[in-house]
Length: 221
Image 1: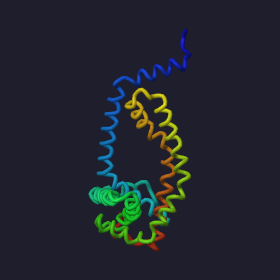
Image 2 (image 1 turned 30 degrees about the horizontal axis):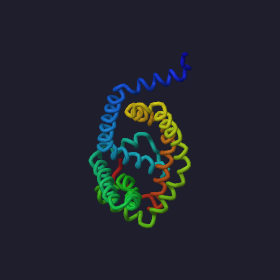
Image 3 (image 1 turned 180 degrees about the vertical axis):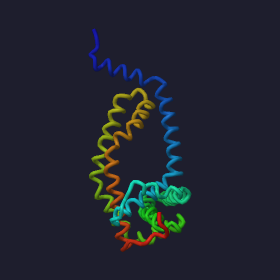
Image 4 (image 1 turned 60 degrees about the vertical axis):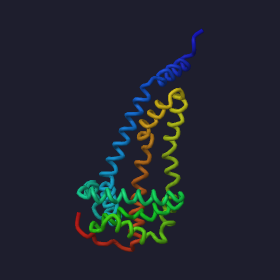
């Protein structure tokens, strides 16, 4: 008695997933993710500063060009210190409870915009200034973020559906399932590439709102 084709296909998939290739693929992916995380820590801060500069130009009605994203490329150290100190402070506050960590995340949220406009400030000084201007405004920013929750849930659906299908058909090998899920994460998260710019522009508008008026940058970029 022959098996139906779908069962054969599933048997073939499960047989392949049981091979040790899944473990090797997972190891390669984890190494790649680790290297990407290090790269993000080194250059991600400067990119974030450039993105803040781009969005502020957009909000101010100035010419916002793609080149703005790379306008802070000579501030790798400043960007590194900003990301490192923000992450360190939030992690330390999160050791107490989750809520203090979330509160401090919003307290430090305007740091990239401050550093973009005021290059003379150190990362720690910009974080301190962010805490000052966010005093009484953290709940407003939280509500702004919450207004995007519908779009974010919609963008998350393909990711959750993909994860469910991968786990369903690769139950024989957790390593292969995790590897495939990691490989599919970016294409399944494509919706966030459209929603995130709107959120960043909203944050820049929020920054302009709480700082009352545009300020002249310390030096031109």
